[in-house]
Structures are given as C-alpha cells and as structure tokens.
Image 1 (cartoon, rainbow, N blue to C red):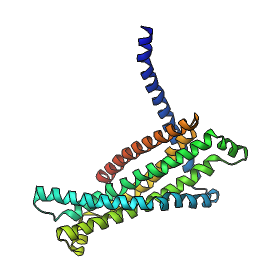
Image 2: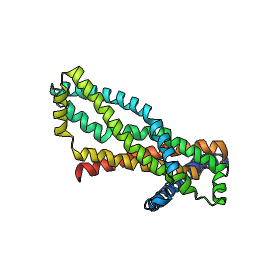
Image 3: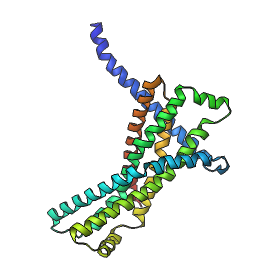
Image 4: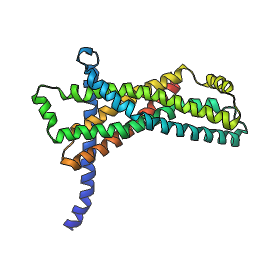
Length: 268
C-alpha cells in the first residue's frame, strides 16, 4: 500500500514543484522588468556597443526568416479571406479592409513575436543559463560588473528596437503580398486596393501595431533572462530552462495580445 501511495504522490509532488518554480520565475520576471525600467532614464549608463551588437543579432539575424514567414502567411491568409468572402457574400470587394485590419492588428505582429521567442528568447536563456552554471555571472560580480546592466539591459533595449522595426517590416511585407494576391488573383488595381484599404485602416491600427511590437519586444528578453538566472543542474538544466522560458514567453505574449487588442478595440 505504501508503494501505491508513493506512486500516486509522486506526480502531484512533481506538478506542485513545477508550479512553484514557474511562479518564482514569473515573480523574478516582474522584478527584472522593474529593474530595467529604473535604468531607462540613465542614458549615460547605456552600453551602446552591447546594444548595437544585440540589435544586429536579434533584428538583422531574424530578418530573413520573418520576411519569408510573413510573406507566405500574407499570401495564404488573403486567399483564405477572399475565398470565404466569395462563398458567404459572393463578393470580394472587402478584401483590402479585412486583410488590412487583420494584418495590422494580429498577423503582422504575432508572427515576428513568436519567431523572436523561438529564436532570440531560446538563445538568450541558453546563453545566460550557461553563464550561470559555469559561474561566469559570479565572476562578473567579483569584477565589479553588474550582471543586469551588462547582460539584461542591452538585450532589453535591443529587443524593443528590433521588435518594433521587425513588426513594421513584417506588416509591410504581409500587406505587399496581400496587395499582390488581390491584384493578380481577384482583379483589383493597385489604386483600388489602396483606396479601399484607407477606409478601414487608420492611425489607431498603426498605433496598435507599434505598441504591441514594443511590449512584445520588452517581454521576450525579460522572461528569457529570468529563466536563465534561475538555471541549475548542468546541461540538462539549461535545456529545461530554455524550454520553460519559450513556453512562458509564448503564453505571456498570447495573453498580452488579447489584452492589448481588447483595449484598442473597445477603449481607444
């Protein structure tokens, strides 16, 4: 009976331990975000060399995959919207409006954010986690270097810049593909598409894209570094921390996407 009881207790014990670890990591993320916001006004302490290197790594390094992914997504989604409109309304005249709003509010923003989580967030957690278990972070402290200012803050600023720029590049590429589909497959002229597009997409949609890009860019390095700082247990621990950080960042972005969309739709 005691063996059976232990077998039942073990999964619940593991679940509770995992829940405790995730809660602690989220708490650390909030603390880390607060520390980064406190450092923002002090421009003299910004490490511009590290920020520039991180922008190149995050932004320029992610540009090819984001352009390809958003181009394919824009083409497929526009075809889908057109097909459903033709089936339901027997008209495709609303393609510019529907595709434009969907791209500016969701598609052109969510895809870069998710790809940055998978590429940049995972790499950041693995790098910081490796530094933690090999005691390089302790060495930085002994040398009088603040790990947050050296490791986290440059990535925080660089991710915000990269995410904002990639969001608008993604939106532009996706809209270009939507325009091409509308012109070559559904008989629109470029001028017709642009005029119809302007009736549905305004400054609020552009602001929504910018705000989401900034928020998502800020979230990714914060969560990734928080999990990296909590890394323990050697190579296996680095893998676990990386997986958990990607899951946590993805879940956070989906939640924030819902909240921001709701705010922009009903209050702004």
